[in-house]
Length: 361
Image 1: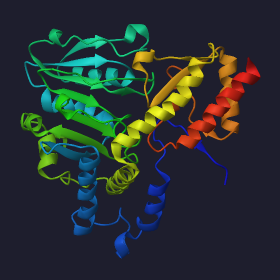
Image 2 (image 1 turned 45 degrees about the horizontal axis):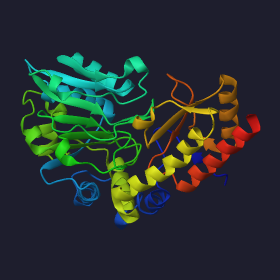
Image 3 (image 1 turned 30 degrees about the horizontal axis):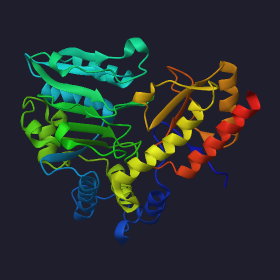
Image 4 (image 1 turned 90 degrees about the vertical axis):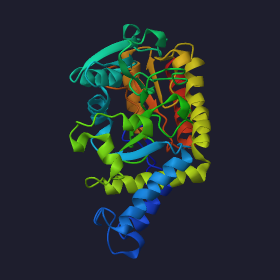
């Protein structure tokens, strides 16, 4: 079988041991003669899967007991509306830090429901870095601050999280969840689609401080109410059972590898392999993101001409690389360096980049 080097931005690779275990038991879970996606979500057998995934996430991510973990649906994009529905009450405004397309979309959906404020933005600099944020400029009536911790399209990442903010801080971590340790004292809510670092598409993970949950708007329709989902342990309606099962297996795998701490160490090591080639290429490869804001998860770069980029991507595809095209809105090239990407695959990519540069200088 031909090796595929999968650098897709999402859905992304799932660890090989996870796929192997799913192959062994997913279609006859614990000799029940039922596949995971066939059994009742009210059954003890499924509840074992459900709560194991929650418990394992809490353990590997060091989530404090004063936070709830929810498994929701609709992708992270539904959270763009659920957050303001639950927390942007009348007379309040929501403050957004714009660092790319996804934060723009989050703000746009909130603006359809209430007042929004752009606290900081790097849009005028083509989102090449994370902007400086002055939290003293928060409007007095701010309900929350929303950030996007990693920006898949532009290849930037917050090096640290907001500190000493006197209102709730909410982070979309869809593309770097479980890849870095979290200082939970700085955040009140984290949400993420699972399909990059936490499993397969279909489930959205929400981690929320209980005190923030208690303040949520009680007039929201039940299916869009965080309080409702939390009160039913994310079993208010039929959950995405197969996706939650895979998330549990991914959490097991991360634990076996050494936890989120090891994922962060490996992310830095793998990203350095690619960034070093870019930095040492004398302009043959040019990174999009400012060095201070570089993402460990999504490495974006251009070549000197569009013709060279086309040749690079064509040859890369022929060599077995998948997903190296930049996002359609910006072009160029992108290496998505998620947890399940083996370091050996990054080393093969590094060697290919060196070889291509030598042949085309």
